[in-house]
Length: 464
Image 1 (tube, helix red, strand yellow):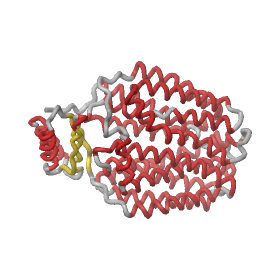
Image 2 (cartoon, helix red, strand yellow; image 1 turned 180 degrees about the horizontal axis):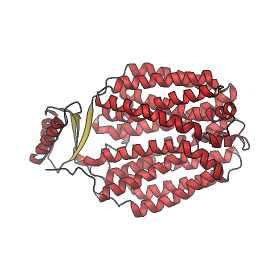
Image 3 (tube, one colour; image 1 turned 45 degrees about the vertical axis):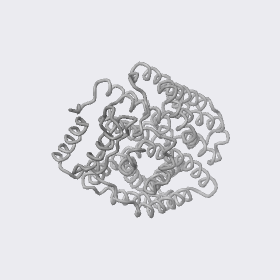
Image 4 (spheres, helix red, strand yellow; image 1 turned 30 degrees about the vertical axis):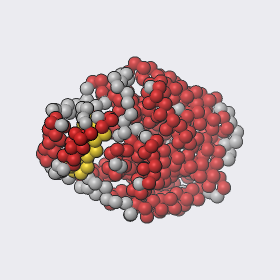
């Protein structure tokens, strides 16, 4: 029994198309970060920075409320139908925000945008459209799309703002959403078999298990802090850069671009070292400590241009490492039977962090001042750092999925136990109702040893 090392053209087309849809969702949020606060302040009611925070964070709040219901609806009514609804809501919200002349109308528009909470549905459709052995690769492509979208947005947003303004960016995202309907209909293949995937979707019955897992709670608190600080920062930094540099917001890309490039150059070797040398915990803790240092640096130098630039550099090095590490840690630490639920809770914590971070950033900057925002974030990072020290060392594993045929209960137990007893297998879970065997293989073995383990697993599956 051999497994193809490459995706089929259909799998690749589905993954690339759906990654672009996912990227569009993120684009609608990330494009606003470097420029929105300055734009919103000029609107009626925008002088209250708390309302600017609400407008920026409303998207995340609606994601928290509707992500799970949309996912459940897609199981019942079909993935594409729910994605269509989500894209239309996103387009409507974009139009409402584009037409808004006061901060309240923009808040309504942002909330409608967020109501199209289709991220989980897109992930489920990716799972429907790819074979088990290629699903991790497909999810990684989506993750890379999100990171790339964020980096591009920080540079592109000031340039787009100069050309079409923030209302024009809202109109652009509305148009892209409508075009995305065609991508979903014509470019994304209809899945042959649409079903629930425990590795990619959240199961309501498993949420309690995830919330009781102390190790996962540490990571979820971390992603809440990370994205809360991200949104709070962009309430303040655009104003601070404008005041200290004399550059208007359309020129801020000249600051973000070199800082991002330099931070990526440092992030990549750190991630490689963490994964290849099984040093994920010390690198992770170091990145949290670096994020704490960045928040303190922001608080102390927010009125000094070069202090802001230096703080941004430290911030983005830490952010990039943590943003790449958190999903990997969730995947390694979550039991295979509810990995999808663990990722769903993780994404919810991220969205809630975005909402609360934006609101608190707006409130503190309005009531107290810029530095208060970063002292608040520093407290969160300090708590996270203490929690991170108590984190278990994550196993150095790679996860493989295998499709199995219909087996009796006895055959299922025998196969699962046989695979677990193989040298080099850290854990194995057979989910009979989905016909999937999920195996975590020791990643510290040589490539030859790993290949031998995978071949032994295939032999056991073939003889089951």
